[in-house]
Image 1 (cartoon, rainbow, N blue to C red):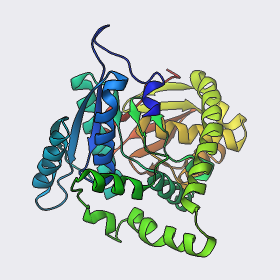
Image 2: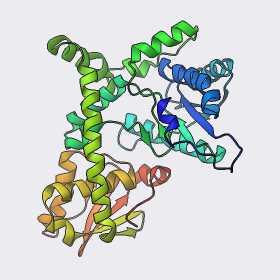
Image 3: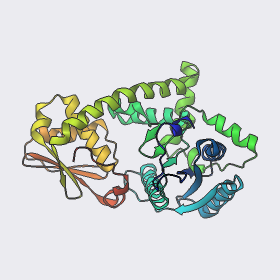
Image 4: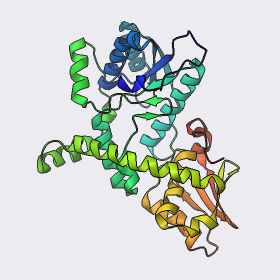
Length: 333
């Protein structure tokens, strides 16, 4: 819980009231271990702990699974509520479930005034995220994986292995739920988890997951510094647009490709919560550097069009309805 003592927590209701911290719970070993750790650390950190169990409603009896997880959490002395979500189809099933989950957690945090939301992502999840990003061809940005702290989202277990969380819940006598989707080879993350990483470990030796996590940490330091400089630069080139924003084409064209592409990816991620592939980025950039009157570019959840000297980004489909709570404050507007 080291990250919780670094300025993340603050009471929104005034001095004297202990901050509330929510824990996102699936019922799996990672989230149950995190809940137990948070409950243990709460008196030391002088915070209140509550849990939100997310029911994605993607499997039979998911409501019963969610209620069972909530009962286990309550047995740890932590208040728990169940949030049933509706999963759309924007960006594929995994991305759509993630969007629905984060929307529900954001709603719960705003409703309760929580200062932080704890997520149970482990070092193994980080390694999988890096490999999936590389497979999408999304460039150096894919190497940075998940941040330990993103706004009020906190991932205290990013340096902990998944087998450690399993051992912890076994020692505590907690019955963790094994989501069958985690072993379903139709999902890319499941294939990385059960096929790709074991092959890499077997062929290249142990420590691959740790190496990927270290790489992510180093890449994030560089990427965050670069993004901060770019955010300062784009203050003058972005304007609000209906269901999105627009970017001045002139500065995009005048700068090197690395900066141009990074601005495009930053807008897509920061405004719409969308991670672009290399192909997506190049197609959008062609509206700047190779403009011949071509029509709009559609990427998952976003339509990008050229309107005179502006590049207009607009949310489409389910993302137009779902992404608003994910949008961070635009530092350039």
